[in-house]
Image (cartoon, rainbow over all chains, first blue to last red; front, side, top):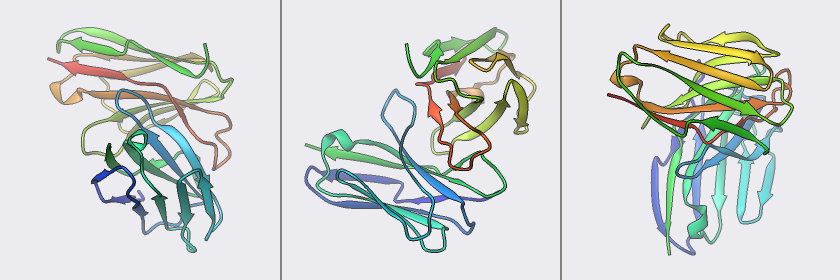
Length: 111
Length: 115
């Protein structure tokens, strides 16, 4: 069973700050997904990365997939209170279609 | 109504009760999933149904019993639960389970408390 480690576990910052959260594993993934879960709701897909070294941008969010496809990062520029939530990464290996999730990074952005 | 709908949103039950969780997806997807989300733990996969056939049972205790009458509906029948079963139970669906980058679409979950 592959293990996805997410760091930091908790992050509390002021509006306008930049931040990066990480998702690491010893396993190679065919794809990696990032989700955001707001309180009282289910996770919502933000992005899927497939190619090693791939960078995808979603407004102020930048996602990167490691060259070896074992790790990923999410960078948020000028965080806003609306970015508050639990950020989950989920990796899919070549032999399965079912994502395995990390514990998540809980982000709070204070106005 | 669109997306994945779960009912009830909240459920409190005693250890001797029997209850059922319901999930319905309006996305035309072929696979449906039950996940358990507990504090400080990763999302735990419980069951997967692919074209109404159960393809995964992740060593889940028999007090949890899934049912998938068609590709749009999924149930989780609960009986004689334990307090440690208290958690958020999330239902999800995906379009094409054969594709490795077919993302999951989640419902908003049922918050279950076992007293």
